[in-house]
Image (cartoon, rainbow, N blue to C red; front, top):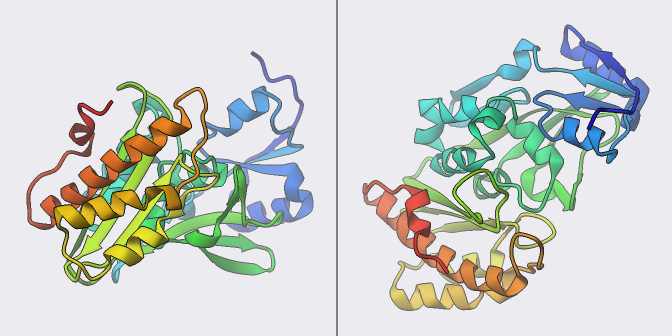
Length: 299
């Protein structure tokens, strides 16, 4: 299907020019980086911008670095960039896990992490690790900058805390100083490109402090605060894991859709949480864990 909607296109040479255009057009201008969601939405008439602002060639938005314990990811950094960068895996293994599950190789080479969180769909893979790592979203406008905790970013399906005049410039994650590990589990209908039926992320440190988040199981990706509170400070035992699984109905509010029924999502979440907790312990103790292999045999 061709794009029938007419719009203007600008390719500014610096971030200041981007912000000036966004200030002039506000919600009538949309930011174009990877375009993997945006182009489809324009084709289907879901959005009808007056202007596309192309930012993908701005050098400052390609910044990807680990400096003084903080991982910074610029707005033009793709999923492939993250997958291929060794320090991302070493510092944030759950983020690395999640990036590998997004769409296909071709899509990952164009799609950006920032674009992913701006789409704000409930099945958003990247949101789960960002919530567990307590990321911060950096926005800019002609008036200045604003930092938004990822826990306050998602407001509703496809709705975020960004303002009409703002542009997201990057995301930062503080790497915990204490020993910690994490794992992300995504269940889809088949082995190829698919949105999540359910996604669970587990982070823990050597003091048995837990951060647990999920996607595709509620209107927005969220932390599992009730389960975290019950687990914090406790070493995992089979009984404790079963107690955590029993709390899942208090944490999620799944729907039935083309990918899964509500009942199946509730059932499979228990299996995923249990396997994810055990896998995180394995990683903490130095054993190699491939998240994709943890989902075999789920019915």
